[in-house]
Length: 334
Image 1 (cartoon, one colour):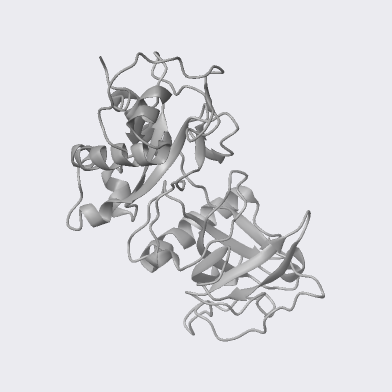
Image 2 (cartoon, one colour):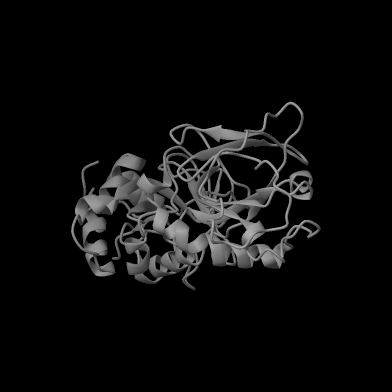
């Protein structure tokens, strides 16, 4: 008889594909401010053009912020505006970490001159690729996982500041929610694991596009997380193969499942399977080193069964309670 806690290799691979397929995308924020939101006074920054650069005819306007490389920014997102925009310590909750400052008035001067409109969306994406990607990866000490939790983005001046001549562009990294809105994080991205994971006790659904979304466990979901595992502690040197990761994670995630549901009998009667995510080579070298252990069940076609409710209590599988299992002696201690 097949043990219910054994991972389905095909389903495990499907999950990895789903995680890898969920790439973060960078966006632009127009830094708006109101009269009750103080704007920092300009200071000398790395965005100032060297003396050998061509002289721009764009009026010299005060930058919308004096925050520089390594600083973090935060704000409050209103219905239609951004309020409370300002600099904060990176150890505190923030929404953006600056990796570079650019002066679009010198790139090239004719494109972003005094009467030029702000760049439209396609041009914004080009500027992010041309001006932000390389310095951001350098800022992160060469470690960036393009399918990890961080995305490269930029902040441009508000429409009013742009009209007044401010051509400051901030490059940086952010973490976004499902709607693409920057969320609060703590700590410098240079010191953080870049894995896009959920925490123990959270439930995750995998949509038709293979993107993952954290949802309440009473909502339909694909798996429930039992533990977060730092593989860097297991593999301090080199890059582990998927096979090496599987071998290391199988006992850890099996024990995590037993602890999570309260022992072998509960796991057996749940009919759920333990499984884990693994890290491809590119993501490992890009700074992703943590994975999830979880509980799920695979459908006959290799897709995820739809779970609702936590495995620690009453739950359903594809709309029905787990089927009764034949009596048997416990195989493992809880």
